[in-house]
Length: 118
Length: 117
Image (cartoon, rainbow over all chains, first blue to last red; front, side):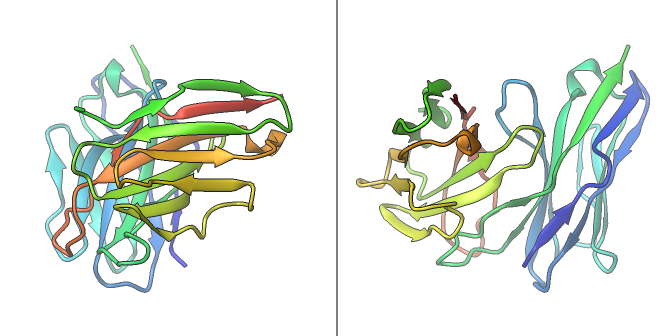
């Protein structure tokens, strides 16, 4: 079974500073995707960044970047120049390439609540 | 529609009542998922549809939970004889395709918060 672990239930950062959220996962698959989703109080999950496991280059989206260590099964999210609007619950998630019967469900971690202090 | 739409956003039920939660996915999306998210937790998979076919219902916690998607678009999650432990946010998500080349992104609705008294 695939599992995703986020060991930091809460983190805080000063506005304009950098913060890193950790995530580890366990899988026997070789082809998969990793995601970071943001969930604000409105509850809608918003995709922050995506990493394909076959790509060695770390994904980057503006102020968001990942440190993907496939051998260590680690997938951390770095937020640079933190903004007040970044405050939310962040979920790390894992998905294998499509399989007929399961549709490649997303498996989520427990989440990290990020607070951004002005 | 432009996004995944869920209704109602909030539902309060007395223990033992039946509830129905609706999901309207993005038009043309083949795959549809239901997740249950308890307070302070990550979402947990409930069930998966490919068009109208329910291909995986391994996450449904009991036979009181039932989901359908009869025409391959709108889906309904029904919970019979609700219990307090059913209190959670129920999230619906859809994705476009089936192929291996699928980028894997799911698009989520805002969820339906169910409170069972």
